[in-house]
Length: 325
Picture: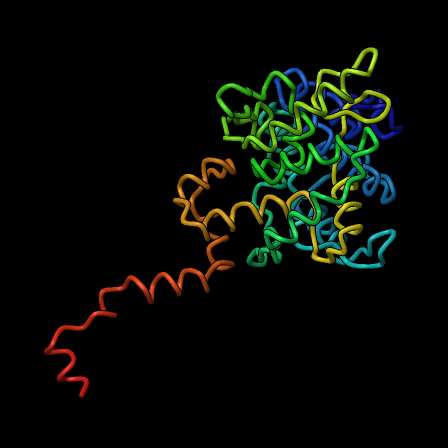
């Protein structure tokens, strides 16, 4: 977490820059995950820059109307590269970092009241799942890496791990070799969403590729990082999206998504094959069953087929047959 931007170098103890730096340092010592800290740093920095541009530098100057202006700015400001507007979820993420900061200020009596306490947040559209990969498409992507090259083996191991376990891309980035138990066929997710840990099953094929990568590629690094999947320089792979996307493109797959597409596909295909939804919930690390239930709409045709084959109304009694006639 780098706090060397000019907005954080203020010395006035009532300034937003000084207070936000103190807040971030306090959170760092409280045990928050580094990716959570980096995200909050990013959002509060954007807010401080916006405030500076409008001559706002002191914490008491930030009122609810000011925060509402910031919300309006987030809703209307075009993205720098794409020329598009921020999606409601992106707006919510940015304003949430600010809300947490002002909650901390009021809790520590820096401010007499919290100006962000009653902000009306942007309504979130119902989340729609993307299309999934078929089994044949998955196999074509898995077969895309050039296995004659060392990092083709690494890429195959990464994608096999995604497909077998359904873990998130950040969870894979922080995965360590010792967290793969080859004897029990399990993988420990120690950096799960919300700081939660869980144990998930991993298949033999994925373990075989991890083992091959570990022995033939990873072991060649003189002083590798502690994480399982590494860059060519031996450091942690922080975002495997580009790796997966490259092989999807090579395989001719044009569906939206990359790492999470493997996660969605695994979950939906397991449900189609009869897996209990509670089991899938546990594997994916969802805290609520309704999150996992989103996947059921993607396999509705399969559910309809089972319904037509197994529902008792399919076998009417004589009275029902006579009434039907």
